[in-house]
Length: 273
Ligand code: ADP
Ligand code: MG
Image (cartoon, rainbow, N blue to C red; front, side, top):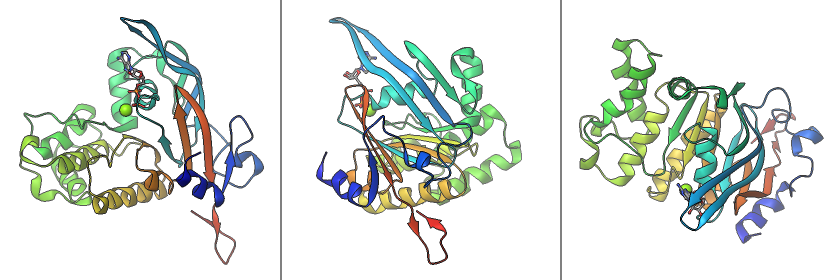
C-alpha cells in the first residue's frame, strides 16, 4: 500500500476485499442497505488486440449505494476508464451484469441507453469531449436539449448558473478551443450536471486543473453528495482521493484494495464525514 493510503487507513476502517464492509458492521448506514445505485456482478471486459485477447477487467463485483462518494485509484492501464465505460453503458462488458439505478443495462438498445444515460448519469470524460463547434454554454445546454428534462426557456439560465458554479461564466460565449484546458474541464463538469442526474461519474476530473481549482471542484462534488447525489471519481490525485469517504484501488483489472473512512462523530453523536 502506498504511503498516502496508509495515512488514510490509519484513520479509517480498511478492508482487503472480500472482507465485510463497514456498512455490514453498521457504522455507515447508507451502505449495504437497500438497492445499490451501481451494481456490478462478475464483470469482465476482454479487448481483442493484434497480440490476442486482452483481459482488462477480471470479474468485478462492486456495489455503490445512493449518496456514496467513491474515489477509484490505480496506475495507468489498470482498467479505470474501462470500468467507467462499462457501467455507464458506453461499452458492453464481455461477461457479467451491470445494473444501474435498478436498470439492467444489457437490456437497453443503443438509443434507449443514450436517453437513459442522459437522464441518470452525468459523465465527465478524461479528455472533456466538448463539441468544438458549439460555444461553452451551448455544450452545457446540449444534454438538456437532448433529454428535455428542463423546459426550453429554462435551459440557458440553468447552464449559466452551472458555469457560475464552476467559475467560468465569463467563458459562456467562447468556443472550447478559445479557453484553457482547465476551463474546458470545468465546462465538462458543468455539462455533466446539466440534467441534474442522480449519478455523477468523473474520469480524472481534476487532471487538468491547478490545485486551487481542483479544490473547488472537490468541494462542489462534496456538496453534490451532501445533496444526495452518488459520485464515482477516478483520480490520480492521491491527496484528493484520500479525502473521499470510500477509496477503491484497481490493479490489472481487479479491485485489490478498499478503504472506507470512518465517519467522524459530532458532540451530539451525529455522524459527519
Ligand atoms: P486506465 O484508465 O486505468 O488507465 P484503461 O481502462 O484505459 O486503463 O485500460 C486498461 C487496459 O486495457 C490497458 O492495458 C489498455 O491498454 C487496454 N485497453 C483499453 N482500451 C482498449 C481498447 N479499445 N483496445 C485494446 N486495449 C485496450
Ligand atoms: Mg483512464
